[in-house]
Image (cartoon, rainbow, N blue to C red; front, side):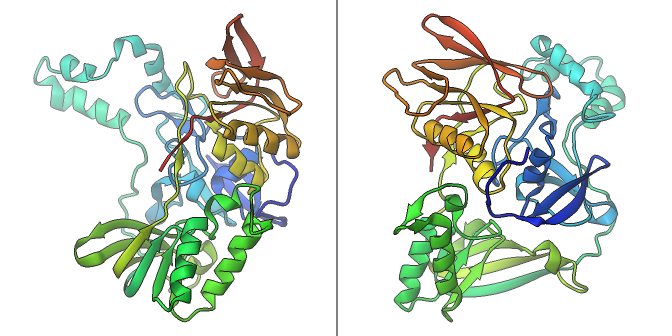
Length: 404
């Protein structure tokens, strides 16, 4: 659902798109993922093996669940992360790995048979009789396996390649990357700054931090403007560095904005070969989830993703959201949800000595041990010393710490 706040969206500019054949509205600045959440769509896909319901887990390129197919015909693109698809008028997106529909997937019967379908069961089960493999087993397994599918039509779109040379390649334009690029550029170094997002700033776009006494987003915009005005700096947004190779060569894939890609004769993508004397990796960190029974239901997300959706795109995974963590990020998430007008049904901190000043139901030294709800989260079970307590929630933000 859409919540209060300014974020980094333009609410006055409506954008029409479709998902699984149904028409919806988002706003300028949305990703497909944030637009779906704004329309109260939590079920995005199905898991690979058991076809369990899947929802968004993150808000960035690390997203494992929100894989969709965009476009039609020769321009069809499978396995696109909904978190990285920019919303534009006329966008067509479809869920994957289900039949006949996302809501009613016949292959979800695999989930009921999960106790009998352990890892590697197919290597033992489909060996006999030998002649059945090519005629029966393999065709059935291949139809059931896989995620998205190619259209098998010739793609007439234009793609380009380019070379760039620099003294320093900075990978990632969060606060660390911006400062590295700015320091080097002011010293006269030729810099290429590559960022996979549509804008610089990294986590500053998703948080309420201040830098040098100003809002983090404002600081990032000011630094970016200074870098853009320098002749010795090349800014590459929408650009993912894909690999490091011999002699200081790096591969990077740049995506054009939907507006630029729609222009006649414009390429959809450009593959860069960047030769750099030095490189600074400023790719940030990824938040760890926490393992518990049925922790994969739609509506259960990383706490950092919930903050990103609330602060950047002004959307929430539900009207009532619980928060579970083992560090202070859980408390920051609860505070941001409250600020956006979202009801926090529980704040669960696994640390026994944890305290909070927030006006929410607080559980210290407790853990979320289970969840309920088939196609979307409905309730969580909290294990305390005194027993197990159930709390209703449409969303659950989970924080298990960070890995670089």
